[in-house]
Length: 65
Image (tube, rainbow, N blue to C red; front, side, top):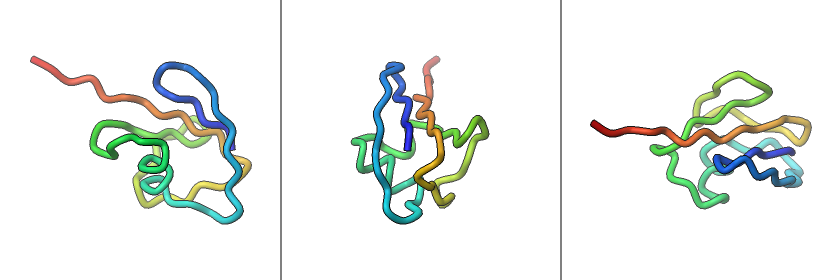
């Protein structure tokens, strides 16, 4: 799986079985409340299952006032 992190670095990770978005986010050290995840260019929810062939982009949510 190709993972594009918020700082634009790319990481490759093997996943033997489909993995939920939330589990991947936590594995990478992110809080699910603070990021969005796009799978192959489409935003997905925390319970979506990710596969080895997917390209994942983690997008940090900017908030402020």
